[in-house]
Image (cartoon, rainbow, N blue to C red; front, side, top):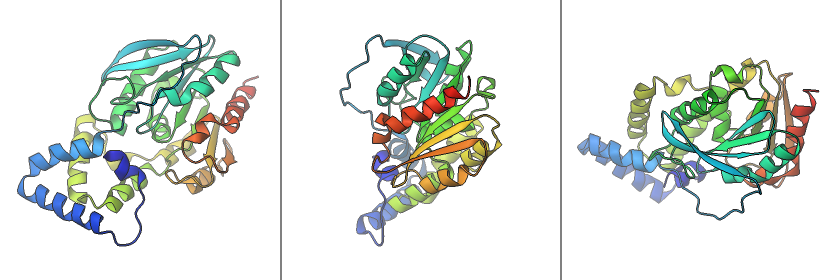
Length: 284
């Protein structure tokens, strides 16, 4: 259900949206705690893709314990480590093609499934949990060479304050740089009760000490001193290309624009591999 909320853009008057608003508002008014339990399932449950993807030769899978439960990791290659983080309702399998390129370039690619995604544990997914799991993964690495992140994973990486990230290059793929605005807008367009939505978000904020209004990936990116490359399709329907274009005004940010690849197919593109090559070429 959550993917239908976050990834479906409604326009104009919608009877279904109005009905959703009426029923969720009434439910929250009559039975607030039950309404919140239902809302957590609706708003925080990602889709676990069952699509079969052939694993690269030599891929190693290893469960790693974190504060968010067991996260499944996937590694390929040897050398300095690049960590890869996927977005909402995604998984590490989306990175297999890029992981092969990273390994062939003399590096180790280390991807992981976020909480409630792929083969990792967890019932619910949200950005504070993403960041906590990501930080735990970083803590278990002796060092890293850089990070790749797709969609909401970009917000996860930019929001992290982990010391391992300091001065490390970042490759952002279709990032949601206006994360809070995008999230609130998507839920509002779905018709879901905004008061109920904010009650659920406030509970997460209290649990993780992570207020929604403190989340600002664009500001974090602007404040980074290390090199960043953004690969983004001009006609992406789910993540704002305009914000990536704005970010590229910063001297340390390079934008590689694509056309016709959308939000998902871009992960298999040659432009993405070129973005990685550009970052590692700067190291030499």
